[in-house]
Image (cartoon, rainbow over all chains, first blue to last red; front, side, top):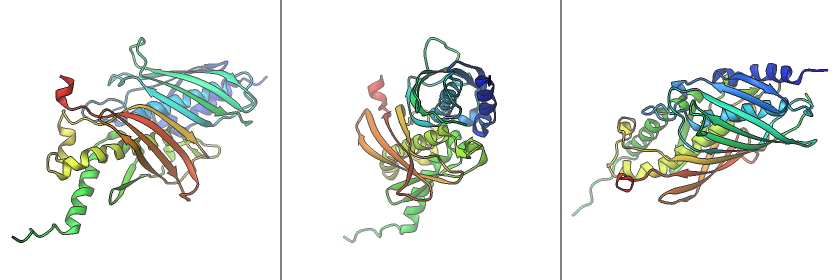
Length: 139
Length: 172
């Protein structure tokens, strides 16, 4: 049997933009994935505060959701985002890395439904949450 | 009494473009993605200059969905900020070059942002334009469209809500 998690890991680690942001896949399997992104002042949305721009947080959440879909037991292979909504709860604390966790909670033949959360080092207060739908594609 | 001679058009244009560039180039993440803005009168167009590091699917290849989302969000925030700061800059209340030196100048904050991916982003430049559906005193609602070769074939669209900067007195 093909190891879905291994394939997904290989795919995620080959994404140029994920590498440009320094993303690291921490967990993957059974429709769940975790990705961290280290703090980088080049990703700041305001040079005065050094707070990471929401767009960079979106990029990690999107990648993490895609990884969760690919690792789902009934996923045939690839995926692409159909729609993604991000809610921004608060500014991420400058200097801290962003940790995201995504769950693919339902999957049909054509569509995968995913939820994700982004945290900094304060694990009680989310920085952002995401919910989206993704395509289900064979590789 | 005769009216003072109006400023030459080029001087006005240069001043406005310089103000816009001061805002755009001041944001590290906008430089990281290499996004620029074209201004034609009051209309802004975001330009995402393609680079290999923006790829999300190397097999196709296609732009990363997160890059598309970020590009649309940056276009929304800059368009909203320009709309908010421009009258102040024109009135001489605010110097665009001082924005990032002044702790009290605040930008609109994203509350939520929803992106529809209509087709895959091709490995080339992309363009986006934001439309402010409503700009209230506290909240603003913005819609954004993005395209590549053909303006009629959007590759993504988005809509989001933003919290507008609040005057100091209301916070205290």
